[in-house]
Length: 200
Image (cartoon, rainbow, N blue to C red; front, top):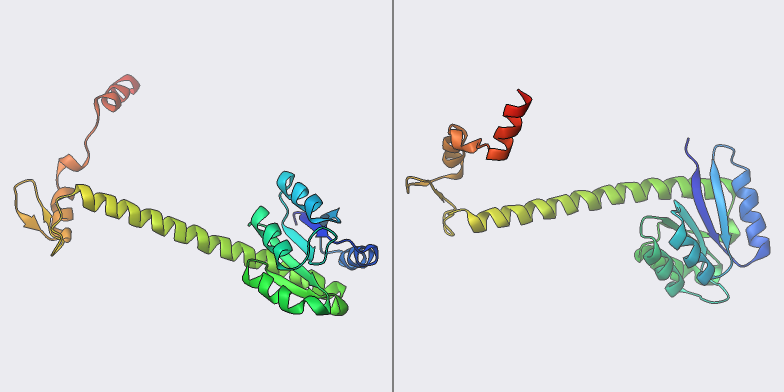
């Protein structure tokens, strides 16, 4: 199993020690841990590292609340951000999930099992989400190409028939069939002809 790169953004020495202890209690969780006690330090580490997971306390000395989560998520949208919330931060932690965090955990209920499960879930959820984003991006690109083709092909704006070379209007299926039967569908430019001749 490949190592999980984790950034712990926390300014409480007691909480840092506890989280390290919880992580160490799970031998199956192969991880590399870096720490930051301020938002500024965390953003600097994010700019020079690719983290799989960010464990984020919302109450830092130089930043607090929802803005902290927003900036961490914006700095590296591909990292799975898990909010480590104090009881008073519960509502803000829920909002942070809305703005891109993967999960939020109450510090007072934290355990090795809960932390490990959240890390595994968050990484997997982030992968699935990224796959969906990639599929949507591919779909948008395909639609853009279709729109471009429609703009250069002689397509009727009403019925969507295509004007063939012989000036007859054909349905898309008939047009494709006639073109597929034609040698004109497989033209070869002079450069490719020369390459074929050189390699033969």
